Length: 253
Image (cartoon, rainbow, N blue to C red):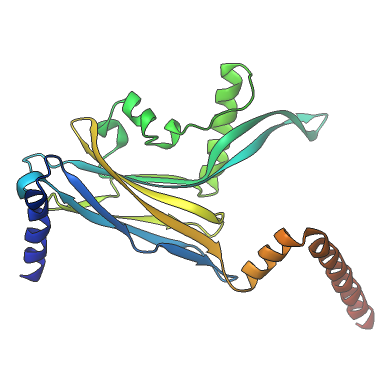
């Protein structure tokens, strides 16, 4: 009974505010994810409600796509070739703004929701990411390196597509789970929610997520950034000390 009252209250909001278009009310289970030495990944829950004008859910409810993305970075991709039995670096290509992590979950396959142009505008789908190649090479070369970068990130679990992973209840409430891998980079992320109907994005909303190191890992990272020379010297001395200690231990045995 309580759940029905909440749904009724949510559905009535657009009527009270005079809204003429559907409104998204999204949220995420964690606004901040802390990485410590034992971090093995996290599961992020994205959920919310769709508020229709007048509180009336259409006969054909809209679809939902959620995208977790960030942070953008400049990356150099190198191509290796085997020469005389040895793998050597050959051509390379730089991308100006490739997301370090990208995951999209949808209520149906992206191809069933929007056309190619709309998918490209909103970057819905791994193949529609705007990676911004910095090299003025041939289109064939750019596509080859884009495929290489996407393949590397997919195998690392950093680029993910989850069609059908968004659950919509009564055409109003939605939720989706996205796995954050252990190797995810730190930085500022966004969780974008898109409401899609008849092949068009009719509403959108964004929530910010911060992924940061905590505890000893945070101290080491901050030290390396603020005192790079001292950090390097200490790291070298520590490596030498551990190597010497290991050598002495083996001599005794």
